[in-house]
Image (cartoon, rainbow, N blue to C red; front, side, top):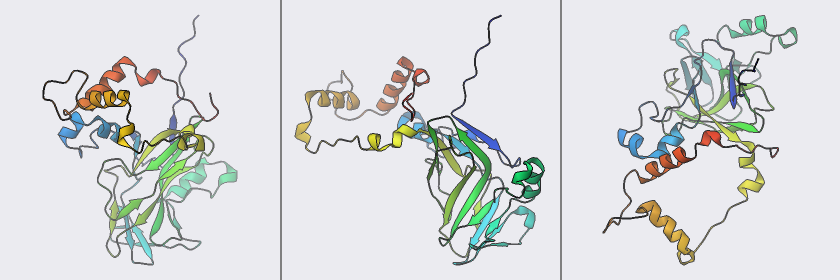
Length: 275
């Protein structure tokens, strides 16, 4: 009897601990409809960047209020009440009811170790928010955690980026945010993604790779093959008479043809150990 096809391990695996949280989804090319139609049709660079990764949502509708020193938080179940969040030893808050659920499912040695939902950090107006997820990446891959690409930013919030080597660290997937508005409530809702998680091969940010850069400083140094490549990019290999400008959608069409000829799914990607 022949064996069935082997299942390829995913590049990233999310583990949902807070079951009320939305499951991460692949980011779409239209930025949930925020990109103009012309961009989705002609700007392949923009739509590729927009869809590169997975959207992660906050586990509940959250409101934050920063008064310059004290940070408060609230959610729909509290009506109009606000709870304090400070950067002291007790400056962390659990997701409502989750600590009990965690203790029921966790091994005895981890009782009382549920991840906090919100933590006030020592930096003024800075809060750490847990997504309700754990994340693990394939060997040699990291997770870049950042704000969703090409979507309007959350009002009153600046999201810090982090690059997590989640192939070796299996922990809570969280983000740090800086509150930029004082004295009025800031809403972070479940209807829109809060984060974009992108897979990055660890070799991509090694010193060897990031130190591999060149810059041609004088335009007269362009070689004939450089000018030929430039002409192909802006006019095509057989430009029409009198053509002097970049045609709309040329890049998109060229990239799509390239992908049809050599699909990226068949490529092997080097990882940190050189395999």
